Image (cartoon, rainbow, N blue to C red; front, top):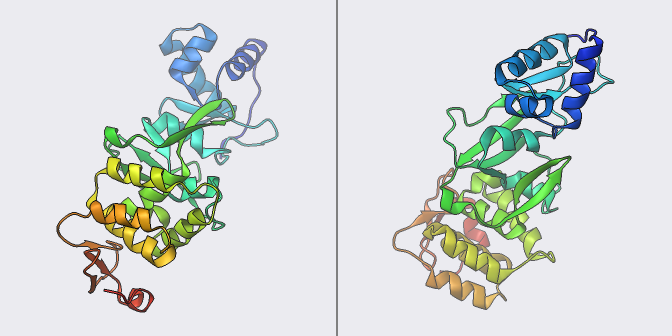
Length: 271
């Protein structure tokens, strides 16, 4: 466990200037700009401060400040979202993490969902006590996002409609189809519901399975949304898709070309 040790006057002044001039996370480039030092000298300085326990190393070349009240540098991340931006950009916070932010679920999830255009080797890294759940998306799928401030850092998060569409594109981003369906129901009951935007996003995602899942769930949860359901039928593609690719799905709803788990049969009997 790293413990805090003293700093000389020059180091204290430099560290104070660094913390004033950076936004939650500190890279070598940030430090060099804030301190007016060469990158090599800055890298050594940050490493020394981390060894003394005044900074906490997240990844190579990236640090976060250690709270003054802490007696050790071995501390969890205070806010994982700014760290995600620095590690995985271009990216956005989505899935169940966005659903929590927009109030679409009361369920507490232990990991942070990040959708990124990067192709990281590790899809579920654990960083300073925080678990991340990473999904790679194409650059064209970076839409339907809102900018929010986390401290001094601007973070992109999927808006409510895009959050729902991401569930329908990959139910695992919602914790599986059951949890995703509950969040979709909450979306339909909220002021955030926007069916035109939902269908527009579905077209832009260009995944036929999304229309199949969306149409099926609308008939199940909101049959009065006839215009949206008709729009989903126009977007149907050939072939069958699973309601949740992670589950055995022996039953077919031919109208939506959708294979579903056995336990869903009683909830949707029309064919």
